[in-house]
Length: 173
Image (cartoon, helix red, strand yellow):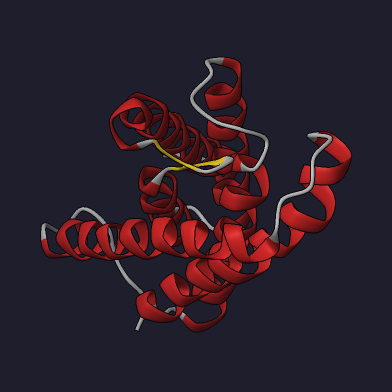
């Protein structure tokens, strides 16, 4: 018989394993999906992984996964500092909205709003001038961030639906 502590430990181990797999997917697929668009390098894989992390693991795990992927992409030269707000804000909103509604499509909308609309503002007003030492016009970032998150979110929704149909994960109502 398992004690309550072992059940919690097994759940944490499973979540950690999922997180490691999602980070690995995000990093391994980045060279094939990372496309330079002006100062930004869009990466639809990040948003695909954000949807998976938000739905399967929750908002805090999704943010951590996005942050680790952004860090590794920057270290390996596959990303810019814009990867942090571009990935993490969408992951957070996707996770919070999905956790609150248990609706996959609303969770994806959270990813799209977070990455496509809020992250460009944070990137243009804070990250670019203070961390990158350059000014980037907000209107130059919105189309690339939106395009990246739309493509990745559609793929993420499709993947979650396939995993659900295969009986691998359970979805909310």
